[in-house]
Image (tube, rainbow, N blue to C red; front, side, top):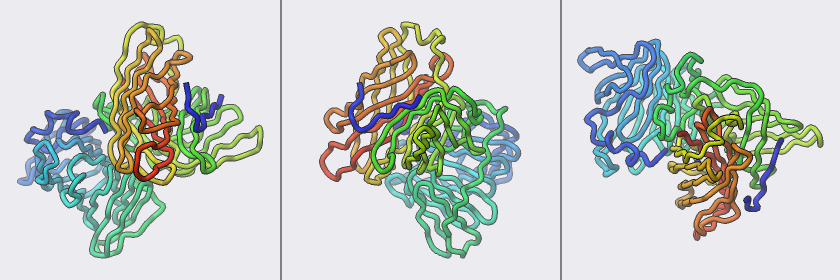
Length: 449
C-alpha cells in the first residue's frame, strides 16, 4: 500500500548544553560512550591505559582503537566515533559550559577513520574548532562529517558544511559532497568517492554508536551505527520531500526493503511502487528504525509505467510494532526522547544547520500522540506543538500546528520495535513567518522510549 499526502492539511541533537549539564563542568575533555576491543589511551609521556565505557579522556591524550572501535562524547555535546586502527588525539580542549568565546577544540586524526557530530564549540567562532591530519586541516561550517586515510585523506560531509584547507588552498564542502587531499601542498579536490567507513559487524551491541543515550540526538551515518538493518519484507516507509519538483509526502506499508553495504536504505518495493535511492546525503539506524535523507531518488509505478523524480527525501523506515503487541492495547502513557533527526530542507533550497529538538508522548488509552518539536532553518524557528492521532493501532497522523508560524502542514509516522519502543515521523509545512519565504519545509525525526 502506497499513500501520498500532497500540500493539503491532514486529520522529529537535543539542546546539547541543556541535555548534559553535568558534562559541562567535568574536568575531562570527553567520556567514552562505548569501546569494543583493545581500545587504549596514550598519554603524552608514553603511558598507556585501557578505555572502557565511562572512562575519561583528557586533553593531550590519544585514543587508539587498535582492533576495536570507540565512541567519545565531549562536554560540549559533540560525538566522535572511531574506526578500527585509528589514532585520535585531543590536542587542546576548553569548554566551561557555554560558548562564551573561550571555548576551544583542537584535535588530530593521526590515522584511521572517524565520523563526528560537532557540538557547541565552533558554532559561534569557527576558528575555535579544527581537526588536523598529515595533509590538511578541517574546520566546521556545519554539523556532521567524516574523514578516512587512504591515498591521502577523504573528507565527506553528511549535513552542514566543512572547510578543508592545506598549503594548496581551501575547499568548502556542502551536504553530500566529498574531497580528496593527497599531499600537504596539493589543492583539495572534489571527488565522487565517499569516505570508506565499514559498518560494525552484526555481533556488536546496538548501543555501540550514537545510540547510547536514550534521549541523545544522533545525527550520524550508518558506519557509526548499531548492526545494519536486514533487508526483507514487512517494512514501512514514511517520507516527505519533493516529487517532480513539487512538495510531497507519502508512505508505503508492508514493503520489501534492501539496504546498501553502508547501511542506507537502497530500495523499497510495495505493490506496484518501487523507491530507488540515487544519492544519500545522510543516513542512520540504531538497528530498529532507519532514517535519513536521499538527495535524489526515483519512484516507479509499474501499473502506469511511469517514474517520478524525487529530491531531498527525508525518510523513516522500519517494521511497525505488531498489532498483537500488548503495548498497543494498554492504557499507559509512554514518553519518548529524541533519538535522531535529519536537518530540515526547504523547497527553495535552504538546508538547516542547527539541531532539531523535541519529545513525544503516546497515550495508548485514548490513542492520542503529543508532539513538541522545534525546527530551526534559514534563521527562523518553528515550534510544533501538536496533538496527533494514533490510527490503525501503530500509525501516527495529524496536521502540523506551529502556532500561526506555519500552515498547510502534515505529520505522518509509525510506532516500531517490541513494546512500541520507537516512533518515527516525517513532517512538512509551509513557512508563514515574515521575512524570506522558505516555501515548504520537510524533515524527519525518530524517538525512543
